[in-house]
Length: 285
Image (cartoon, rainbow, N blue to C red; front, side, top):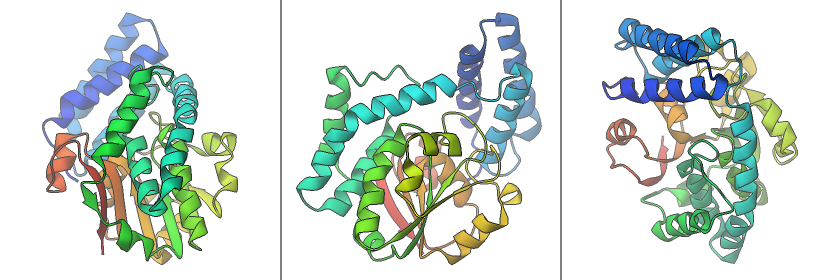
């Protein structure tokens, strides 16, 4: 997906947020914002949206001298998701388990656990999840996905969200599928890295865990290890979670690929020919 003018204020807002997470030094926060503006000036028209976001966040981290501003937020995200997991598990276990696990995984993508003050102890959290369950899938290729699970490469997205993904892992394994989980190679935003995957015991739920090789937003092929590129080429299906992975993978020709996401961003929705706030399970072959 290419950059859109509306990407600029969104990226600067995220940079401001992570600067405030990292430091109370207002002057340093200003330096980060100014650097972000300079990155936008230089690279706004250059290629995929994720290439721009990688540049701007890497520059922010460099100036802050902080390799993981979201460290505590990631812990909060996983803790919040764990409190809601029993509700998701009960929903999945009732009937039509695979389709329901796909939906719950996408619901996980709709919540920015720990980032926007999400509190799983409040009734509103359960109400939000129930509302998403009732809404269901707007684009539903789950039946097609179900036939392509022999050798899955699963591109993970955020902390918190990954907890709900485990319900889908269970369904894939029950159907005889093999799972190669792919996490970020180093901290960026609130994305899952090997550290969080091991802490949550997710490595024991899948067949192997690979990394993207770097802290690039989404997947940067130039920075990806050879074993990941080989896995992508040999996959019976790539499952791409979230918008950042969509922004990247839509620029490559790896197929078949299933995009599981909530269209939280107008630019992503437009690129997919959809509307905002849709629950999407789309296969492209």
